[in-house]
Length: 108
Image 1: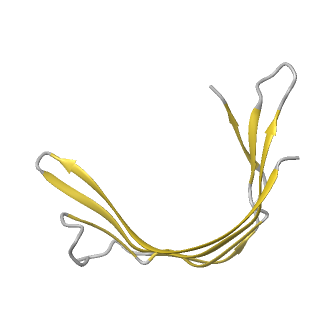
Image 2: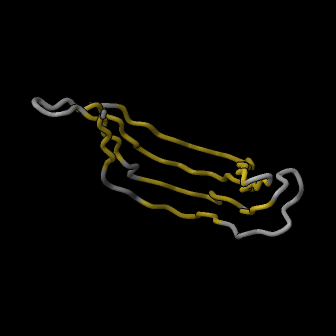
């Protein structure tokens, strides 16, 4: 039943999103977003139920491993092209976890 996926994700990038307030554009910047993330056995299954709505069941990964995964610096400033002048901190995940359960999606 359904499809099982294995993900081995390796990223190293920076992201900036601009928000305009009046004449000022402020950028939320995530510098050094990436690291390694492994997800094992994410399942996707279309479930048909007699007399009820069909839905898509997305199973949580049974195994998750992170190595330096996250953002090295998070900042807010008015110019996205200059070096960060201050940082709101960083978030890096290292370790393993197991998850159970599923996310069910129905059509509206």
